[in-house]
Structures are given as C-alpha cells and as structure tokens.
Amino acid sequence: MTRALSTRPVIASGLLGGSPQPALPTSGGLLLRPWEEADVPAFLSAYRDDEIRRWHTRRPATESQVREWFDAYRQDWKHERGGHWAITRDGVEVLGRIALRGFDFDDGIAGAAYWVLPAARGVGVASRALLTLTVWAFDEIGLQRLELDHSTRNQASCRVATKCGYLLEGTKRSAAVHDDGRHDMHLHARIQGD
Image 1 (cartoon, rainbow, N blue to C red):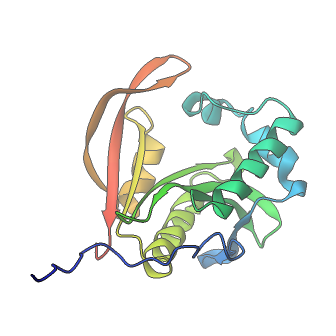
Image 2: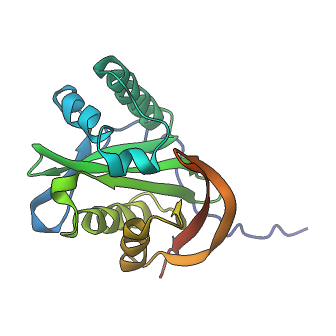
C-alpha cells in the first residue's frame, strides 16, 4: 500500500515560539517590531481616534489594559497563535498596528489585521506594512493563504487590501458587530504565488 504525499506546507513545530519575534523593515524607513512598554500611551490613544473606534468594538480603556493586551500578544507568539507588531518610523514613532492572527500551520493559513494613526493615513503606511508582513509570512514561515476582512463600509481598508494583492473573494453577511450595529464584511485573501 502506497501513501499519498501531503500537499500541506511543512512547517516545523516550535518555529515561532522558540525564537524571538522578528523586527521586519519595510521600504521608506518603516519598521515592524514587537510592542514595547514605551508604546502604551500611543496604543491607548489610537483607540480614542474616531475612525479606529468605528471599526473596533473591542478596545482597551486604560494603560493597564494595554499592558494586558501586550502580554497576550507575547503569549500569542510564544504559543504560535499569532504575531502583533507596531508599525513604526525608524523603530521609534508608532504609526499603526499590524497583526497575523489565528495561525493554522496544518492548513498554512492566518488572518491579517491593521490600523493606522490619523497622522500616518493616506501615505502608504498600511500597504507597506501589509506587503512586508505578507512576504515574511509566505517566504519565512511558509504560510499558503492569508485572509483579511473588513466592514464593507470601510473603503480605506478595502483599498489597502486590493493594493496589496488581496483579492476580494466575497461578502460575509452580517458578520461583525460595530458601534452602529451589525456589518457585512468583505473577505479578501492572498495565496502563495499571487
């Protein structure tokens, strides 16, 4: 009896949790790096921005809660559930957040998420960060498919996804709760080789 070869990616167990979360340089002087204690005020202020609040119902209210989130982010990396990065200018000034969540190494899938602070919007910060993280996820850890979703009303996120080669695959009806009620969500994805 002959066994069929698996078409699933070969990803070594412990690949992420056994090593420090990497800092990832992008074009134009941006650096994606793990969140640090000094970032707590910037992170908290982001969730006071009307646009970020509009699209995120789960948000921290105090610096203590931000520290808990940062600890959860470190645990996600340690236990190979995801990675969370600050989008920074030269590693210092926080411009936004980007993450890969829900690592599924058996199927080679993860989900991308991002937001950008008001002063950094409209100049390609989110798209440079997403492209950098996409290349890293495919080339360095061998993922095969990255997904992202956003409210169908969030045109800025849709433009970033499309610009970065994440094809619109469909609409998930009434899939997420926002401050003003339930929203339909666009599902975008990019696969290895796109």
